[in-house]
Image (tube, rainbow, N blue to C red; front, side, top):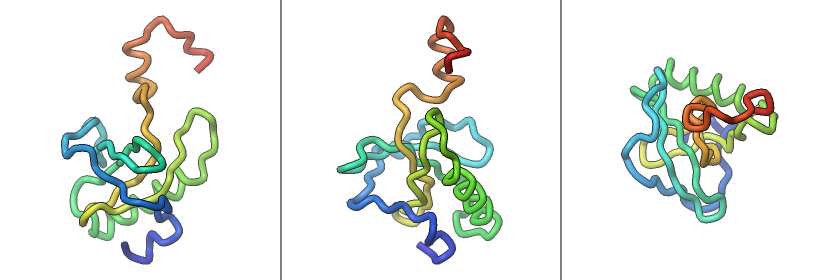
Length: 117
């Protein structure tokens, strides 16, 4: 991985193994989501930008998003573990949310108290 991601590098010891090349979510305009497994961290969510990961405009978007996400601290926002690389692909790495996204959760559980979320 190049030096521009040095401060945002994912520091998990051990190999992150991609569970499948089947997308988990394809609704984003800029990225696709995959799941992976890590020996210590367990199930992970991997966000991979579409297009050429080494194009300067894509790198700039990754750096901006990762920089902002890394600073966010709130109980209902998943922590960014960092930027990881599997093969030639670059991913933003976070813990996997078993209940999915908030909109997806609300769709399958319309009776939940939305004010408490």
